[in-house]
Length: 279
Ligand code: AMP
Ligand code: ZN
Ligand code: FE
Ligand code: FE
Image (cartoon, rainbow, N blue to C red; front, side, top):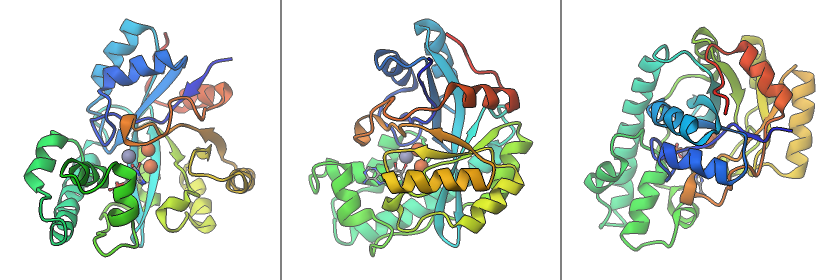
């Protein structure tokens, strides 16, 4: 039975591996397929495709698209979208992520004066900016030992430094993903680390708008949360997915720690515009 981990990040967003390193790490982890799903960008796809062909690893090209509902962040995986079709959205989200992070940097720098926007921009090298980039700067300047400590002490949603992301409504994002020939999967809907969880009436509306699946197996979901996702999936006719949400050294998540069922991948491929790259 194929081992499929469709949700992982590289340094093209807020992970720490290059796309080629991600593919190699997937091979070492014994995966048959890995998804490259950076936040709001496809910039890692080409390097990942070349590495997948070189190393004989299956590859699912995707993006984790940022959405928000009344300031609450909602993440939607867009698998197998046609290249280019969603670029305007990604470019808007990248701009708004940058303005938002500049505000957060200003807030944080008032209390952590060594934090420098310039250093963050240099390190990010054009990647869509997120709190992990600011976290790395706080670690770099010696304030905290690792990303997680900065989230707990400084960067969490309920803290005084937090600024929301101005990105589209989840229903708009689901529709755009379908228009781009992609397959939308709601990521970590019950992640408790995000303050609040995605409400059921929104999930119902997203399903009507074309949502394909929902992540059940994710590190941020408790056993009870997974049962709740199963109920939501049955009730709203959604496929069940899972994935590691690997971020390299940025998080403890290990490639392959949560997986997608091969039958679900075959459905994704039937509905998606792009092919899955086989090994
Ligand atoms: P943002 O897009 O700026 O809202 O930041 C969200 C990103 O931060 C997500 O991709 C998470 O993977 C990452 N993140 C959230 N909490 C933590 C944490 N405690 N440690 C490391 N990364 C985190
Ligand atoms: Zn991330
Ligand atoms: Fe996410
Ligand atoms: Fe993710």
